[in-house]
Amino acid sequence: MKIAIIGYGKMGHAIERIARERGHEIVAIIDADNILDFNTPEYRSADVAIEFTTPATAADNCIRSFSQGVPVVCGSTGWTSRLPEIQMMCDRGQGTLLWSSNFSLGVNIFFAVNRCLATLMQGFPQYLPSMTEIHHIHKLDHPSGTAITLAQGIIEKNGRVKEWAEAEEGAKAEKVAGEERLVMPIAHRREGEVPGTHIISWDSPVDTITIEHSAKSREGFALGAVVAAEWLKGRKGFQTMDKMMNSLVADSALLDILR
Image (tube, rainbow, N blue to C red):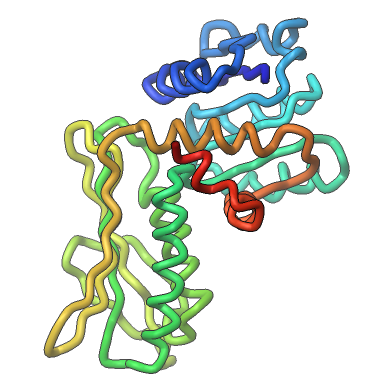
């Protein structure tokens, strides 16, 4: 399989190494200093591009790739205000995109655990949710895209939680003015080179239930992105990690990709 890499920072280097280890060919690497290389035969030969850049550049990079007929796996966060625009292009047949706030297979399992716990907590109003996310000092957006996805999962599965808001660490959920529903606080910390930690707590007067996912390195994100590129090849339109995970489980292929 031929892969193009958009963004050649630490994630781009990890993706390149893992893709080569899995037998793929890297046909183009695009960074801030060679944007014109989108318009090359080498780039157009790619089966899929993998994009990890910045909130300011991700959407335009997807559009540039679409113009060359190359599908995109995108892991950049902080640009979801433009995601409907890109999804509409995909729906019109103008491109193919698999976007996720987090490509780690473990995190996507954590998403499912989070939704399950939120559903259980629907019947226990004494428990109030909060979240803290911790990332490296280079991460520009906050709260993280993963934290927002986790919060959306809680809102979807627990009718007591209406929305989320950024808050100081240790803040408690508060009722929406004039309503019985809650605003869930999300705190963020930026420390050293932490790849990513997400902690969700449900606190009551007598105890606290906590679930946590902590990444040990960028390897999990890079592997998941390459697996997503393998899965995306030959597919069209707007795709999601939920679709991919469901497909892999249905195909009994999940254990194979984790080898």
